[in-house]
Length: 220
Image (cartoon, rainbow, N blue to C red; front, side, top):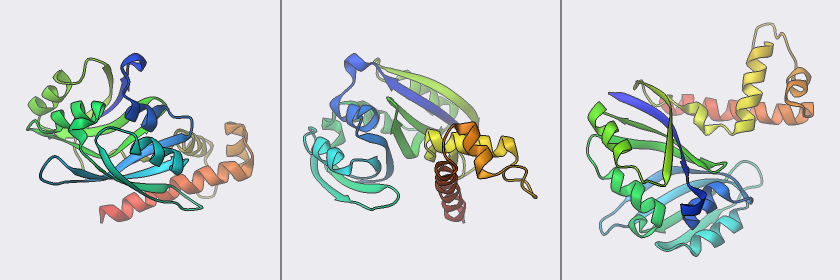
């Protein structure tokens, strides 16, 4: 059983409105599909985590063909959440993605992450099923395979849950020795590498550490 980690970008001229809302909106830093519940009749309930303006996301989603309802939960700290009841086969780009999901031999894992004009995710399956997934991808979608390897479990790809800035902070901290015992660097050193304040660097590191530890606990 193999796992592929890939990034998919969509031709801007062919980019559906819902994909633009998820990946290209200036009001949404990042959107993540966390859970999907499929029911009979082609209706799905999808839970999103939203980093950004949740009201703007809800308004845009409500105007998307195929979306029947939107319910949001806002929080002062951390991501907010949106629960969508939708008919994905009526939602342009999701149509192509879900048609692919219905082929045998592979599964698309969550989270599916939308940011910076792209969709990031992982696919697990047999070699033949994975090949079909790429052969049947939409023409307007450019897929960059970043990693191919043996499927090892839930913690594979946990780094994809981190924002770009959080990954940069962790990379800098590791390189500088921030996590060594005793520490060889401080938050101020990480901040200098990132060209930001120590407080901001600390925030990026704490958020990244929280996501990693939650993934570790979820594994067990």
